[in-house]
Image (cartoon, rainbow, N blue to C red; front, side, top):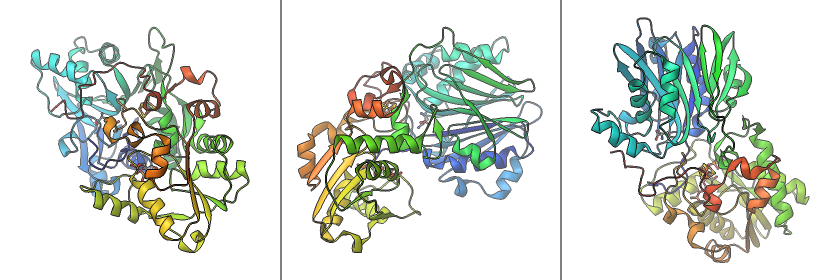
Length: 470
Ligand SMILES: O=P(O)(O)OC[C@H]1O[C@H](OP(=O)(O)OP(=O)(O)O)[C@H](O)[C@@H]1O
Ligand SMILES: NC(=O)CC[C@H](N)C(=O)O
Ligand code: SF4
Protein backbone atom coordinates (compact mmCIF):
# COMPACT_ATOMS: atom_id res chain seq x y z
CA UNK A 1 0.00 0.00 0.00
CA UNK A 2 0.82 3.68 -0.01
CA UNK A 3 3.39 3.83 -2.76
CA UNK A 4 2.90 7.60 -2.85
CA UNK A 5 2.53 7.75 0.92
CA UNK A 6 -0.38 10.16 0.73
CA UNK A 7 -4.04 9.53 1.37
CA UNK A 8 -5.47 8.29 -1.87
CA UNK A 9 -8.76 9.53 -3.10
CA UNK A 10 -11.49 6.97 -3.13
CA UNK A 11 -14.05 5.83 -5.60
CA UNK A 12 -16.95 7.65 -7.15
CA UNK A 13 -20.07 5.94 -8.51
CA UNK A 14 -22.78 7.19 -10.84
CA UNK A 15 -25.88 5.57 -12.41
CA UNK A 16 -28.63 6.78 -14.74
CA UNK A 17 -31.85 4.98 -15.64
CA UNK A 18 -32.83 4.88 -19.34
CA UNK A 19 -31.80 8.02 -21.12
CA UNK A 20 -31.01 8.64 -24.78
CA UNK A 21 -27.69 10.16 -23.65
CA UNK A 22 -27.03 7.85 -20.71
CA UNK A 23 -23.35 7.25 -21.54
CA UNK A 24 -22.56 10.93 -22.18
CA UNK A 25 -24.30 12.09 -19.00
CA UNK A 26 -22.54 9.37 -17.00
CA UNK A 27 -19.26 10.58 -18.49
CA UNK A 28 -20.04 14.09 -17.21
CA UNK A 29 -21.07 12.64 -13.86
CA UNK A 30 -17.72 10.88 -13.58
CA UNK A 31 -15.94 14.07 -14.59
CA UNK A 32 -17.52 15.79 -11.58
CA UNK A 33 -16.48 12.88 -9.36
CA UNK A 34 -12.90 12.73 -10.62
CA UNK A 35 -11.51 13.91 -7.27
CA UNK A 36 -12.73 10.59 -5.77
CA UNK A 37 -10.60 8.37 -7.99
CA UNK A 38 -7.91 8.98 -10.58
CA UNK A 39 -6.65 5.48 -11.22
CA UNK A 40 -9.18 4.10 -13.71
CA UNK A 41 -12.62 4.93 -15.07
CA UNK A 42 -15.41 2.93 -16.66
CA UNK A 43 -18.97 3.10 -17.96
CA UNK A 44 -21.28 0.16 -18.54
CA UNK A 45 -24.55 0.47 -20.52
CA UNK A 46 -27.52 -1.91 -20.78
CA UNK A 47 -28.59 -3.22 -24.18
CA UNK A 48 -31.57 -5.16 -25.53
CA UNK A 49 -31.49 -8.99 -25.28
CA UNK A 50 -30.10 -8.94 -21.72
CA UNK A 51 -26.71 -7.67 -22.90
CA UNK A 52 -24.38 -4.90 -21.79
CA UNK A 53 -21.56 -2.93 -23.37
CA UNK A 54 -18.81 -1.21 -21.48
CA UNK A 55 -15.73 0.90 -21.91
CA UNK A 56 -13.02 1.04 -19.24
CA UNK A 57 -9.45 2.24 -19.06
CA UNK A 58 -6.63 3.32 -16.77
CA UNK A 59 -6.27 7.01 -16.02
CA UNK A 60 -8.45 10.09 -15.85
CA UNK A 61 -11.98 10.29 -17.25
CA UNK A 62 -11.06 12.56 -20.17
CA UNK A 63 -8.18 10.26 -21.14
CA UNK A 64 -10.22 7.06 -20.94
CA UNK A 65 -13.22 8.21 -23.01
CA UNK A 66 -13.12 9.66 -26.50
CA UNK A 67 -16.32 10.89 -28.16
CA UNK A 68 -16.39 7.79 -30.39
CA UNK A 69 -16.23 5.51 -27.32
CA UNK A 70 -19.29 7.23 -25.89
CA UNK A 71 -21.14 7.14 -29.23
CA UNK A 72 -20.47 3.38 -29.46
CA UNK A 73 -22.10 2.64 -26.09
CA UNK A 74 -24.79 5.38 -26.06
CA UNK A 75 -28.41 4.74 -24.99
CA UNK A 76 -30.08 2.44 -22.43
CA UNK A 77 -29.29 2.74 -18.72
CA UNK A 78 -25.72 3.37 -17.57
CA UNK A 79 -23.53 3.08 -14.50
CA UNK A 80 -20.01 4.48 -14.11
CA UNK A 81 -17.07 4.39 -11.74
CA UNK A 82 -13.83 6.24 -11.01
CA UNK A 83 -11.44 4.12 -8.97
CA UNK A 84 -8.74 4.46 -6.46
CA UNK A 85 -7.92 1.00 -5.22
CA UNK A 86 -8.33 -0.09 -1.62
CA UNK A 87 -8.33 -3.85 -2.26
CA UNK A 88 -6.58 -5.19 -5.35
CA UNK A 89 -3.92 -3.77 -7.61
CA UNK A 90 -4.17 -0.75 -9.80
CA UNK A 91 -4.56 -2.64 -13.10
CA UNK A 92 -7.05 -2.64 -15.97
CA UNK A 93 -8.51 -5.99 -14.90
CA UNK A 94 -9.61 -4.25 -11.69
CA UNK A 95 -11.20 -1.26 -13.40
CA UNK A 96 -14.89 -0.96 -12.54
CA UNK A 97 -17.83 -1.36 -13.18
CA UNK A 98 -17.28 -5.08 -12.73
CA UNK A 99 -19.47 -7.02 -15.19
CA UNK A 100 -20.50 -10.69 -14.95
CA UNK A 101 -22.57 -12.99 -17.14
CA UNK A 102 -24.92 -15.51 -15.57
CA UNK A 103 -27.23 -17.79 -17.55
CA UNK A 104 -27.13 -15.47 -20.55
CA UNK A 105 -27.83 -12.34 -18.46
CA UNK A 106 -25.39 -9.61 -17.62
CA UNK A 107 -25.06 -7.73 -14.33
CA UNK A 108 -22.65 -4.94 -13.39
CA UNK A 109 -21.61 -3.31 -10.14
CA UNK A 110 -19.74 -0.12 -9.25
CA UNK A 111 -18.50 0.03 -5.66
CA UNK A 112 -17.34 2.79 -3.34
CA UNK A 113 -16.07 1.49 -0.02
CA UNK A 114 -14.21 -1.53 1.23
CA UNK A 115 -15.51 -4.93 2.32
CA UNK A 116 -13.67 -6.05 5.45
CA UNK A 117 -14.64 -9.74 5.17
CA UNK A 118 -14.08 -10.08 1.39
CA UNK A 119 -11.01 -12.26 1.86
CA UNK A 120 -12.88 -14.85 3.93
CA UNK A 121 -15.88 -14.83 1.61
CA UNK A 122 -13.63 -15.28 -1.42
CA UNK A 123 -12.06 -18.37 0.15
CA UNK A 124 -15.52 -19.84 0.80
CA UNK A 125 -16.69 -19.04 -2.73
CA UNK A 126 -13.57 -20.60 -4.27
CA UNK A 127 -14.11 -23.73 -2.14
CA UNK A 128 -17.53 -24.04 -3.77
CA UNK A 129 -16.12 -23.61 -7.29
CA UNK A 130 -16.21 -19.87 -8.03
CA UNK A 131 -13.57 -18.57 -10.43
CA UNK A 132 -12.49 -14.98 -9.78
CA UNK A 133 -11.53 -12.57 -12.55
CA UNK A 134 -10.12 -9.73 -10.41
CA UNK A 135 -8.36 -9.18 -7.10
CA UNK A 136 -10.96 -6.70 -5.86
CA UNK A 137 -13.20 -7.04 -2.83
CA UNK A 138 -16.08 -5.72 -4.98
CA UNK A 139 -16.17 -8.89 -7.12
CA UNK A 140 -17.22 -10.96 -4.09
CA UNK A 141 -20.55 -9.15 -4.02
CA UNK A 142 -21.48 -10.14 -7.57
CA UNK A 143 -20.59 -13.81 -6.91
CA UNK A 144 -22.86 -13.85 -3.88
CA UNK A 145 -25.54 -12.09 -5.90
CA UNK A 146 -25.70 -14.65 -8.73
CA UNK A 147 -25.60 -17.51 -6.22
CA UNK A 148 -28.65 -15.99 -4.54
CA UNK A 149 -30.44 -15.40 -7.82
CA UNK A 150 -31.86 -18.91 -8.03
CA UNK A 151 -35.51 -17.82 -8.26
CA UNK A 152 -34.65 -14.84 -10.49
CA UNK A 153 -35.66 -12.27 -7.86
CA UNK A 154 -32.98 -9.57 -8.14
CA UNK A 155 -33.95 -7.63 -5.02
CA UNK A 156 -34.10 -10.73 -2.84
CA UNK A 157 -30.70 -11.76 -4.19
CA UNK A 158 -29.27 -8.35 -3.25
CA UNK A 159 -30.78 -8.57 0.24
CA UNK A 160 -29.35 -12.05 0.79
CA UNK A 161 -25.94 -10.99 -0.50
CA UNK A 162 -25.62 -7.83 1.59
CA UNK A 163 -26.51 -9.91 4.63
CA UNK A 164 -23.17 -11.69 4.09
CA UNK A 165 -20.85 -8.76 3.44
CA UNK A 166 -19.35 -6.50 6.10
CA UNK A 167 -17.76 -3.08 5.89
CA UNK A 168 -18.34 -0.08 3.69
CA UNK A 169 -20.34 -0.14 0.46
CA UNK A 170 -22.21 2.32 -1.64
CA UNK A 171 -23.06 0.17 -4.68
CA UNK A 172 -24.65 1.17 -7.96
CA UNK A 173 -25.85 -1.94 -9.78
CA UNK A 174 -27.04 -2.33 -13.38
CA UNK A 175 -29.17 -5.30 -14.41
CA UNK A 176 -29.54 -6.68 -17.91
CA UNK A 177 -33.09 -5.29 -18.02
CA UNK A 178 -31.71 -1.80 -17.51
CA UNK A 179 -32.73 -1.44 -13.87
CA UNK A 180 -30.39 0.77 -11.86
CA UNK A 181 -30.12 -0.12 -8.18
CA UNK A 182 -28.43 1.79 -5.36
CA UNK A 183 -27.38 0.03 -2.14
CA UNK A 184 -25.92 1.57 1.00
CA UNK A 185 -24.36 -0.29 3.91
CA UNK A 186 -26.10 -0.07 7.31
CA UNK A 187 -23.32 2.16 8.71
CA UNK A 188 -23.59 4.52 5.73
CA UNK A 189 -19.84 5.08 5.60
CA UNK A 190 -19.86 6.55 2.09
CA UNK A 191 -22.29 9.04 0.51
CA UNK A 192 -24.86 8.13 -2.19
CA UNK A 193 -27.66 10.40 -3.44
CA UNK A 194 -30.71 10.13 -5.68
CA UNK A 195 -31.56 12.77 -8.28
CA UNK A 196 -34.08 13.36 -11.06
CA UNK A 197 -33.33 14.31 -14.63
CA UNK A 198 -35.85 14.81 -17.48
CA UNK A 199 -38.33 12.42 -15.89
CA UNK A 200 -35.58 9.84 -15.31
CA UNK A 201 -33.59 9.06 -12.16
CA UNK A 202 -29.90 9.23 -11.37
CA UNK A 203 -27.64 8.07 -8.52
CA UNK A 204 -24.34 9.68 -7.59
CA UNK A 205 -21.70 9.56 -4.86
CA UNK A 206 -21.89 13.32 -4.57
CA UNK A 207 -24.39 16.01 -5.48
CA UNK A 208 -21.80 18.06 -7.41
CA UNK A 209 -22.37 15.57 -10.27
CA UNK A 210 -26.10 16.40 -10.29
CA UNK A 211 -25.27 20.07 -10.82
CA UNK A 212 -23.14 19.26 -13.84
CA UNK A 213 -25.73 17.05 -15.56
CA UNK A 214 -28.53 19.44 -14.47
CA UNK A 215 -30.30 16.85 -12.36
CA UNK A 216 -32.46 17.84 -9.44
CA UNK A 217 -31.37 16.53 -6.04
CA UNK A 218 -34.10 14.33 -4.54
CA UNK A 219 -32.53 12.88 -1.38
CA UNK A 220 -29.68 10.83 -0.01
CA UNK A 221 -30.06 7.11 0.55
CA UNK A 222 -30.61 6.06 4.15
CA UNK A 223 -28.27 3.67 5.96
CA UNK A 224 -29.00 0.13 4.78
CA UNK A 225 -31.41 1.28 2.06
CA UNK A 226 -31.84 -0.36 -1.35
CA UNK A 227 -33.32 1.84 -4.09
CA UNK A 228 -34.58 0.22 -7.30
CA UNK A 229 -35.07 2.42 -10.36
CA UNK A 230 -37.08 0.82 -13.16
CA UNK A 231 -40.17 1.41 -15.32
CA UNK A 232 -42.28 1.70 -12.14
CA UNK A 233 -40.20 4.66 -10.94
CA UNK A 234 -38.27 4.45 -7.67
CA UNK A 235 -38.92 1.74 -5.09
CA UNK A 236 -37.18 1.83 -1.74
CA UNK A 237 -36.53 -1.15 0.48
CA UNK A 238 -35.33 -0.35 3.95
CA UNK A 239 -32.97 -2.60 5.86
CA UNK A 240 -34.70 -4.94 8.24
CA UNK A 241 -34.26 -4.25 11.11
CA UNK A 242 -33.45 -0.60 10.44
CA UNK A 243 -29.89 0.32 11.52
CA UNK A 244 -29.72 2.13 14.89
CA UNK A 245 -26.46 4.03 14.59
CA UNK A 246 -24.78 5.28 11.47
CA UNK A 247 -21.04 5.86 11.12
CA UNK A 248 -20.72 8.35 8.31
CA UNK A 249 -17.09 8.96 7.37
CA UNK A 250 -16.23 12.36 8.86
CA UNK A 251 -13.08 12.47 6.74
CA UNK A 252 -15.34 12.87 3.68
CA UNK A 253 -16.07 16.36 5.01
CA UNK A 254 -12.49 17.13 5.95
CA UNK A 255 -10.77 16.07 2.75
CA UNK A 256 -12.45 13.74 0.27
CA UNK A 257 -15.71 15.19 -0.90
CA UNK A 258 -15.96 18.29 -3.05
CA UNK A 259 -16.85 21.52 -1.22
CA UNK A 260 -19.78 22.19 -3.55
CA UNK A 261 -21.40 18.84 -2.60
CA UNK A 262 -23.95 18.20 0.09
CA UNK A 263 -23.27 14.88 1.76
CA UNK A 264 -24.90 13.32 4.81
CA UNK A 265 -27.27 16.30 4.90
CA UNK A 266 -24.62 19.04 5.17
CA UNK A 267 -22.70 21.11 2.66
CA UNK A 268 -18.99 20.25 2.64
CA UNK A 269 -17.76 23.85 2.24
CA UNK A 270 -19.77 25.05 5.24
CA UNK A 271 -18.63 22.10 7.35
CA UNK A 272 -14.96 22.83 6.59
CA UNK A 273 -15.50 26.51 7.38
CA UNK A 274 -17.12 25.59 10.72
CA UNK A 275 -14.11 23.40 11.53
CA UNK A 276 -11.83 26.35 10.72
CA UNK A 277 -13.81 28.67 13.01
CA UNK A 278 -13.63 26.18 15.83
CA UNK A 279 -9.89 25.80 15.25
CA UNK A 280 -9.48 29.58 15.64
CA UNK A 281 -11.29 29.36 19.00
CA UNK A 282 -9.25 26.37 20.17
CA UNK A 283 -5.81 27.50 18.97
CA UNK A 284 -5.60 31.28 18.52
CA UNK A 285 -2.31 32.94 17.63
CA UNK A 286 -1.32 36.39 16.36
CA UNK A 287 0.01 36.71 12.82
CA UNK A 288 0.06 38.98 9.77
CA UNK A 289 -2.17 36.67 7.76
CA UNK A 290 -3.84 33.26 7.50
CA UNK A 291 -3.10 31.16 4.41
CA UNK A 292 -4.24 27.68 3.35
CA UNK A 293 -2.35 24.88 1.72
CA UNK A 294 -4.80 24.57 -1.18
CA UNK A 295 -7.11 23.05 -2.19
CA UNK A 296 -8.65 21.20 0.70
CA UNK A 297 -7.29 23.62 3.32
CA UNK A 298 -8.96 26.66 1.69
CA UNK A 299 -12.34 26.49 3.37
CA UNK A 300 -11.14 25.93 6.94
CA UNK A 301 -8.71 28.83 6.37
CA UNK A 302 -11.63 31.10 5.42
CA UNK A 303 -13.35 30.06 8.67
CA UNK A 304 -10.19 30.61 10.74
CA UNK A 305 -9.59 34.07 9.23
CA UNK A 306 -13.23 35.11 9.70
CA UNK A 307 -13.31 33.99 13.34
CA UNK A 308 -9.91 35.46 14.26
CA UNK A 309 -10.24 38.68 12.29
CA UNK A 310 -6.76 38.06 10.81
CA UNK A 311 -6.51 38.80 7.05
CA UNK A 312 -6.68 35.90 4.58
CA UNK A 313 -4.12 35.53 1.80
CA UNK A 314 -3.50 32.86 -0.82
CA UNK A 315 0.19 32.64 0.02
CA UNK A 316 0.60 29.32 -1.77
CA UNK A 317 -0.64 28.73 -5.32
CA UNK A 318 -1.76 25.29 -6.47
CA UNK A 319 -0.89 24.03 -9.94
CA UNK A 320 -4.22 22.93 -11.43
CA UNK A 321 -2.66 20.52 -13.88
CA UNK A 322 -1.52 18.16 -11.11
CA UNK A 323 -3.95 15.65 -9.63
CA UNK A 324 -4.71 15.41 -5.94
CA UNK A 325 -2.64 12.30 -5.50
CA UNK A 326 0.17 11.23 -7.76
CA UNK A 327 2.37 8.20 -7.38
CA UNK A 328 6.08 8.86 -7.07
CA UNK A 329 8.48 6.02 -6.30
CA UNK A 330 11.16 7.86 -4.27
CA UNK A 331 11.16 10.48 -1.52
CA UNK A 332 13.05 12.99 -3.69
CA UNK A 333 10.45 12.59 -6.42
CA UNK A 334 7.67 12.98 -3.85
CA UNK A 335 9.25 16.17 -2.59
CA UNK A 336 9.52 17.37 -6.16
CA UNK A 337 5.87 16.46 -6.79
CA UNK A 338 4.77 18.62 -3.86
CA UNK A 339 6.90 21.49 -5.21
CA UNK A 340 5.10 21.15 -8.54
CA UNK A 341 1.77 21.22 -6.76
CA UNK A 342 2.26 24.13 -4.35
CA UNK A 343 4.41 27.21 -4.91
CA UNK A 344 4.58 30.22 -2.51
CA UNK A 345 3.95 33.80 -3.60
CA UNK A 346 7.39 35.02 -2.53
CA UNK A 347 6.50 38.73 -2.31
CA UNK A 348 3.90 37.97 0.40
CA UNK A 349 6.14 35.93 2.67
CA UNK A 350 9.31 37.86 3.65
CA UNK A 351 9.41 39.01 7.32
CA UNK A 352 5.80 37.95 7.84
CA UNK A 353 4.20 35.95 10.65
CA UNK A 354 2.01 33.35 9.01
CA UNK A 355 -0.70 30.91 10.07
CA UNK A 356 -0.99 27.98 7.65
CA UNK A 357 -4.28 26.09 7.63
CA UNK A 358 -4.05 22.52 6.35
CA UNK A 359 -6.92 20.01 6.24
CA UNK A 360 -4.79 17.03 7.30
CA UNK A 361 -1.25 15.74 7.71
CA UNK A 362 -0.77 12.13 6.63
CA UNK A 363 2.92 11.39 6.05
CA UNK A 364 3.98 14.98 6.40
CA UNK A 365 5.52 15.37 2.93
CA UNK A 366 3.46 18.46 2.07
CA UNK A 367 3.96 20.17 5.43
CA UNK A 368 7.67 19.37 5.60
CA UNK A 369 8.67 20.68 2.18
CA UNK A 370 6.30 23.63 2.00
CA UNK A 371 7.10 24.97 5.47
CA UNK A 372 10.78 24.84 4.51
CA UNK A 373 9.94 26.80 1.33
CA UNK A 374 8.27 29.51 3.44
CA UNK A 375 11.27 29.64 5.78
CA UNK A 376 13.66 29.89 2.83
CA UNK A 377 11.70 32.91 1.60
CA UNK A 378 12.24 34.66 4.91
CA UNK A 379 8.99 34.06 6.84
CA UNK A 380 9.52 35.37 10.40
CA UNK A 381 7.18 32.93 12.15
CA UNK A 382 5.28 29.95 10.79
CA UNK A 383 2.34 28.56 12.77
CA UNK A 384 0.32 25.62 11.51
CA UNK A 385 -3.26 24.69 12.36
CA UNK A 386 -4.84 21.44 11.16
CA UNK A 387 -8.61 21.31 10.68
CA UNK A 388 -8.93 17.73 11.96
CA UNK A 389 -7.40 15.73 14.84
CA UNK A 390 -4.13 13.80 14.33
CA UNK A 391 -4.40 10.71 12.10
CA UNK A 392 -3.13 7.93 14.37
CA UNK A 393 -5.08 4.89 13.13
CA UNK A 394 -5.49 3.24 9.71
CA UNK A 395 -8.77 3.18 7.77
CA UNK A 396 -10.31 -0.12 6.60
CA UNK A 397 -13.49 1.34 5.13
CA UNK A 398 -12.45 2.68 1.76
CA UNK A 399 -9.68 5.21 2.32
CA UNK A 400 -6.26 3.93 1.45
CA UNK A 401 -4.15 4.64 4.50
CA UNK A 402 -4.24 1.19 5.96
CA UNK A 403 -0.85 1.08 7.66
CA UNK A 404 -0.09 2.80 10.96
CA UNK A 405 3.61 3.08 10.14
CA UNK A 406 2.87 5.59 7.39
CA UNK A 407 0.89 7.96 9.59
CA UNK A 408 3.35 10.51 10.97
CA UNK A 409 1.11 11.45 13.90
CA UNK A 410 0.99 7.81 15.02
CA UNK A 411 4.64 7.92 16.10
CA UNK A 412 5.24 11.58 17.04
CA UNK A 413 3.73 13.84 19.67
CA UNK A 414 2.50 17.29 18.69
CA UNK A 415 5.66 18.76 20.22
CA UNK A 416 7.94 16.41 18.27
CA UNK A 417 6.03 17.17 15.08
CA UNK A 418 6.37 20.92 15.63
CA UNK A 419 10.15 20.52 15.69
CA UNK A 420 10.24 17.93 12.89
CA UNK A 421 8.23 20.16 10.54
CA UNK A 422 10.21 23.29 11.43
CA UNK A 423 7.23 25.17 12.85
CA UNK A 424 6.94 27.76 15.58
CA UNK A 425 3.64 26.26 16.78
CA UNK A 426 1.35 23.43 15.65
CA UNK A 427 -2.19 22.61 16.76
CA UNK A 428 -4.77 20.13 15.57
CA UNK A 429 -8.53 20.49 15.94
CA UNK A 430 -9.67 18.41 18.91
CA UNK A 431 -12.01 15.43 18.43
CA UNK A 432 -14.67 17.18 20.56
CA UNK A 433 -14.20 20.38 18.54
CA UNK A 434 -14.57 18.51 15.25
CA UNK A 435 -17.75 16.77 16.42
CA UNK A 436 -19.34 19.83 18.05
CA UNK A 437 -18.58 22.09 15.08
CA UNK A 438 -20.27 19.58 12.77
CA UNK A 439 -23.63 20.86 14.04
CA UNK A 440 -25.34 17.47 14.25
CA UNK A 441 -27.12 16.07 17.28
CA UNK A 442 -25.39 13.19 19.04
CA UNK A 443 -22.36 13.27 16.72
CA UNK A 444 -20.82 10.30 18.58
CA UNK A 445 -23.66 8.13 17.19
CA UNK A 446 -23.45 9.73 13.78
CA UNK A 447 -19.88 9.65 12.52
CA UNK A 448 -17.02 7.24 12.04
CA UNK A 449 -13.85 8.84 13.43
CA UNK A 450 -11.81 5.65 13.82
CA UNK A 451 -8.70 7.05 12.12
CA UNK A 452 -8.53 9.62 14.94
CA UNK A 453 -9.46 7.58 18.01
CA UNK A 454 -9.20 3.91 16.97
CA UNK A 455 -12.85 3.14 17.82
CA UNK A 456 -13.77 1.08 14.77
CA UNK A 457 -17.52 0.74 14.14
CA UNK A 458 -17.19 -2.54 12.17
CA UNK A 459 -14.76 -5.25 13.25
CA UNK A 460 -12.04 -6.23 10.80
CA UNK A 461 -9.19 -8.70 10.53
CA UNK A 462 -5.95 -6.65 10.83
CA UNK A 463 -4.09 -9.37 8.92
CA UNK A 464 -6.08 -8.55 5.79
CA UNK A 465 -4.09 -6.26 3.51
CA UNK A 466 -4.69 -4.44 0.27
CA UNK A 467 -3.24 -7.32 -1.72
CA UNK A 468 -4.93 -10.14 0.22
CA UNK A 469 -7.24 -11.04 -2.68
CA UNK A 470 -4.43 -11.76 -5.09
O1 LIG B 1 0.93 14.79 4.84
P1 LIG B 1 0.86 14.36 3.40
O2 LIG B 1 1.26 12.93 3.22
O3 LIG B 1 1.58 15.29 2.49
O4 LIG B 1 -0.71 14.37 3.00
C1 LIG B 1 -1.59 15.44 3.31
C2 LIG B 1 -1.80 16.34 2.12
O5 LIG B 1 -2.41 15.61 1.03
C3 LIG B 1 -3.66 16.19 0.67
O6 LIG B 1 -3.53 17.01 -0.47
P2 LIG B 1 -3.95 16.52 -1.97
O7 LIG B 1 -2.97 17.01 -2.95
O8 LIG B 1 -4.19 15.05 -1.99
O9 LIG B 1 -5.36 17.21 -2.22
P3 LIG B 1 -5.91 18.72 -2.21
O10 LIG B 1 -5.29 19.44 -3.37
O11 LIG B 1 -7.38 18.56 -2.34
O12 LIG B 1 -5.55 19.38 -0.92
C4 LIG B 1 -4.06 17.02 1.88
O13 LIG B 1 -4.91 18.08 1.53
C5 LIG B 1 -2.74 17.49 2.46
O14 LIG B 1 -2.29 18.66 1.82
N1 LIG C 1 -11.92 3.45 -2.85
C1 LIG C 1 -12.89 2.64 -3.13
O1 LIG C 1 -14.07 2.92 -2.84
C2 LIG C 1 -12.46 1.36 -3.79
C3 LIG C 1 -13.55 0.34 -4.05
C4 LIG C 1 -12.99 -1.08 -4.07
N2 LIG C 1 -12.69 -1.52 -2.72
C5 LIG C 1 -11.76 -1.16 -4.96
O2 LIG C 1 -10.65 -1.31 -4.48
O3 LIG C 1 -11.90 -1.01 -6.14
S1 SF4 D 1 -11.53 5.46 9.65
FE1 SF4 D 1 -11.45 7.68 9.13
S2 SF4 D 1 -11.29 7.74 6.89
FE2 SF4 D 1 -11.97 5.67 7.46
S3 SF4 D 1 -14.23 5.72 7.36
FE3 SF4 D 1 -13.66 6.18 9.48
S4 SF4 D 1 -13.50 8.44 9.52
FE4 SF4 D 1 -13.46 7.83 7.39
